[in-house]
Length: 538
Image (cartoon, rainbow, N blue to C red; front, side, top):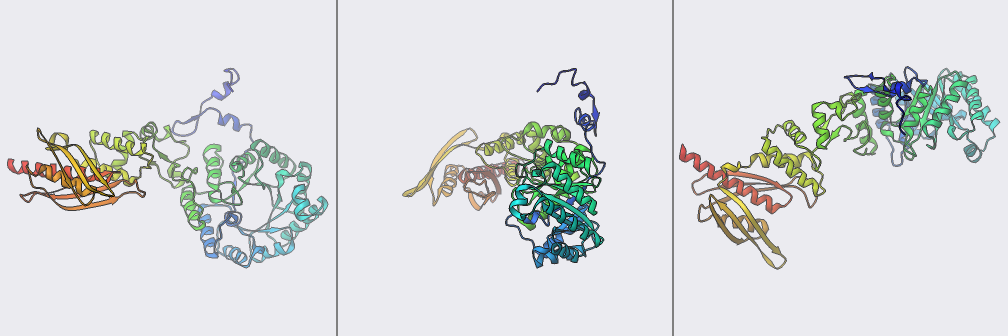
């Protein structure tokens, strides 16, 4: 939709944030929001996160993660569901005794035995919950609306009687009739709850609806509001932020967004959106986000896709020539600017591939300690693109092999021997045979030879063709597949010796082993002839 010039005047006001970056609309829209100054971060990685199918953490692993979450600066750590198992109760109890700065919370249904199990762990807070939507209330707990209200009041009062904080959740709140939902929350508030939670238990909300529900509760209840959003439609983070826009002061999240089904709102995404875009404060030490993500990834075995925001391996990676050129000049040209890799403990990477440009390749080479000429950079870029066009992912190891081969090649003007063409014939009932055409100074030399395999045949053919000029002996041959797969980039290093005892090595990197072997040999031969010329002059 196009906005008329008259209607959009206010959006054209320049509002600089940092380093000259300007946003024309965000600040104007924020004026209509009910944003809190600070948002508390309630982390449920150890409870809802562990409910990710296939994840089961040991007590020691949970303690390790809890310590890292405390280092990260989360306000509340939901350590687990004590009534669910002996091991779970042990983990919650041990985390509560760790002396962490974060509040330690235990989950409990609105049942006294659940609550007592959490209290036994000496937690700072008990998070109690009950289903309030008709579909869950009628089919799971089989209680009337009035009975649910009574359960809520009794549970909250029991928790508060023991002198700990109480967080109350109306499970499936977003599918609960609004008047009744408000009544449930008011009951919890009157019973002494410190904070109430609006969970989008099955992840069906859209941001405007989440904003509306939160606004309605905010206008009817005095205590702080917390939200817990699931990611079934990929809207957990937008819904959590929409709730904050309407006045929610706490957000429940997990590291890497793990959790039941499609997971929960990602801590990294919620925190960085609040910090960098909304300019709302949190207590999170964002420089530890990446290391925390990696720890949870390792201990849970749930791998993050490379394009995952904030902490994914590609979050600050650039391949496109246009992008890399811009980023190398000024990072903010193709990055948000208000969020840098350093802010989240990550790093910027320039990646080689079919979309790479010479500027990016040159920067990567310098980082590797390789200083190539402009001509060499062009040749390296050409070979990288050639590899990428074949559908291969070009790794740093591939780039290094290509670069070392190109930089190590004899300059055109110094070449004595040049490979014009060669062909190899091999097969099940065929003796491997290679034919080669070389140019030696101004002469054209041709010949063919056999071998035990295609590489041997090709190298024998080169030696035979040059035999009338010089007897070249192959003293060493090394082959290494740089990356996995049958189409891996092959790096070949050869060492040759001539009749006068001159020794030279040559290197080449190609997908085709025979090609790489012949190129490496030609490179070494040229070095030998250059050495001989220099010795004559000396």
